[in-house]
Image 1: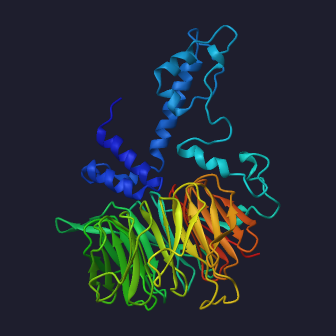
Image 2: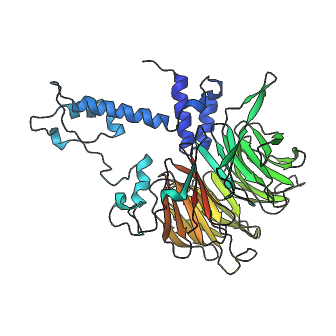
Image 3: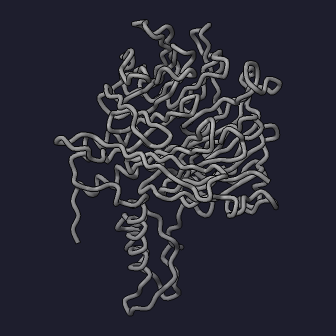
Length: 504
């Protein structure tokens, strides 16, 4: 048996990506020179590091449970940390004639209920709040009609690596997905088609005069308002514009490093991108040229969101938020207050409130009229990964419903907030692992959430009750609703994309 440090580094790099530590993965990949290794990432299946660790743990358990005479004896389950501690392993081997280990044995501190560091933490909230009295493992025994039947789910296979993102076309049932296999795909799910068709958008770079696959993750994608163009951002540092048929229309190259976020403005004449090179760029969509590059952050820019047709906000690992305007050489507003990197920012439908979430476990609401945050919402117990505003309230198609903000956290919960009052309306607690994505239905009545527990849950925003649930085959990175509000798309760590049909 032999293995190289390059191979170990690659598996660690992929583990960081799959676990959502995108920025840590980038830094680790740069320092360990992942890009210079000759490993074809497309051939390495998801969760490889966890898989090989599990096999190693099983080997250690088998070694301990096998007596010198070859007979097998019962042992308590071994934790991963126990397995790498020689003293623990040797004590487990010293079993007395009654079959009990000295001192009553060393039990996993987590017992049956999770807790502790790493993946155990989110288990604490798994059955809390809504019908969870039967313990963590009972949470999926749902009321009749809640579990979405298999025949209502369409599984879309084709990606060779984890699928980080997905987004519905605003005008028709085309679902775009972006993956670690260096492709995006456009899946045609219109009912008139007898079979789902797919267009593969291969992200290539020029090398020695030839077009070759970039072998870099597709990190972001967004449809324009008319639904005829899809923009993608990649770890190879390029943004690209594609037609619905998968034709590459333009390549946008000015970032010096991976692109983390990318958005069209409402009119569809500009694209906004954020990169690890600490800059944000407004691109002219019709020509693919840079209109203006903004260099105000002192660390990688993580997210951007348009405020108007020519102004936007950006956030960064530098803990800062800047509001910028086209043709202005300085930010028109800057917000400080977060004590750790700011993961996501979103303007409300009217462009009045700016919400931000951070690794400091807080959610903050800002206004252009104030230097300090209007609300500092502290309830989550771990990092908040993303936020979404409801399509409700003044200026929306649902003006008679209150404006609500949803937050998704690594503490395995989703929270719904009344922003005017600064209060939490509902805490949604059925997930058992970090929640990476939330999305409101177009009418604002439902919220979909996706977690690394492989579950997509659909909740009533009014009551906070769980109304539908589906368990996939891999951890969920993204969930999204189609424009009609009758289908939910989801993308997963095992390379699958699936669509849930919510029509009765």
